[in-house]
Image 1: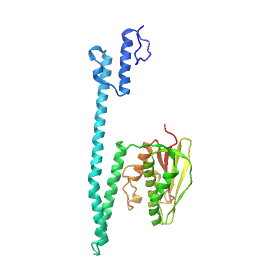
Image 2: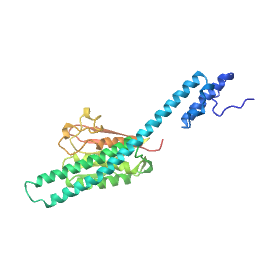
Image 3: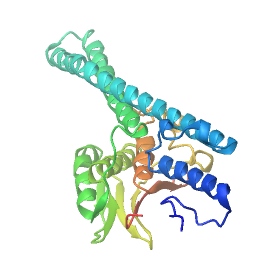
Image 4: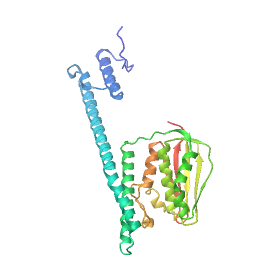
Length: 293
């Protein structure tokens, strides 16, 4: 009896047809397992269908290699940008700070202050662009795991306390003992962005609430402010890169914070949404999976 190939599809076809199906199946299996090599298959011994199938897989393999090489070039570019700008910007920030502390001339003081503020803005922009690019190109892979939610919320709130105190804003945290599936470092980054936004757009002496909602498949961290709110037409746009509403054009910001929040949520299997009404505050929901899929 003829031995069955390990790649056999189980089809009951006579003679040569069975061989063709098995070879087609073998090619596909090799492609799936990333072990396909053009030299394995001699076109002079293949049918027309097999030859086309082989050429298609060879072309796909070449495209995959080109994509991989492009990703590697992007990784190197991002790394170079990060490395080459870090020291000059750090020096500009340091010298502008020294100038601001020592400059007593009433005419020059505002200029020095503006230099420092613009330097800080540029530093913030580059750091966030690098973060966004690394997430988009998978240079930095998130490593989610099953863990408690409360500690990462407490860390994010702690980082934002100083900014809240300067505006007399109270941050209230609702206790939660549950767990979810997330990357702690990047989730903290996302929550810090949400809390910072809530503080920035809330009036003085108001309150920002951070609580957790438990669902069957997801756990959602909810950040609620008492700010100016967001119109319905803009709610689907606020997570876009560089998007800033005309209502907050005078506030400091680059329109990257909420974009990063969305990227982080999606990268670990979650999502984000916002509920808001003009002049009645906003609630942002950061959803995390309960279990790995």
